[in-house]
Length: 183
Image (cartoon, rainbow, N blue to C red; front, side, top):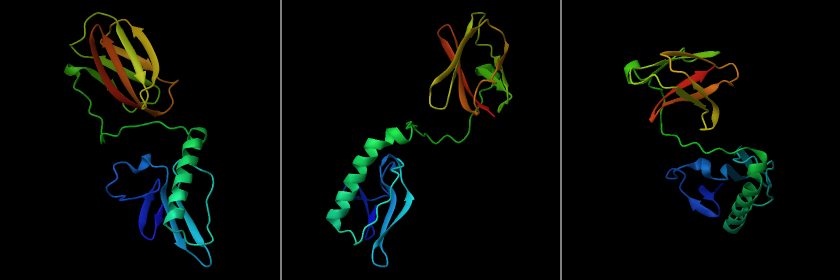
């Protein structure tokens, strides 16, 4: 929330430019300005979907802003899990997926794919069975199966929703992985 140019978070003035991750905060982008006879609250973004906008008849002083910030923090903590699912995603800045050459591991194609994925194994594999696992973007196991070793496998993906997935292939104590996109 902002008051007279200051940005407030949980009852304290903070510098938004030096804050590591503003998406962790319960109040984002609230601007309080003096309007015609009352203070307008401009709702630019409510993290947690509180479902209400507060209006005030007078400009907020520092004590009122501290109280409002604390109220919204408590309200957000109480309702966030009920109104919207929360999943923590640690972004490492990757903007592309590097496909390893076949001799280093797996070759996955077509990628992106519509309904199936071809998995080609490299020379590091033996004749032991392959344990395949597909994980979604959040790291949840979507599918697991065991297959007899083959240099080329076809995986049917018709049951998968469109999205980004990680395929992990384990054989003995070795593991390879690759990323694919289901359209």
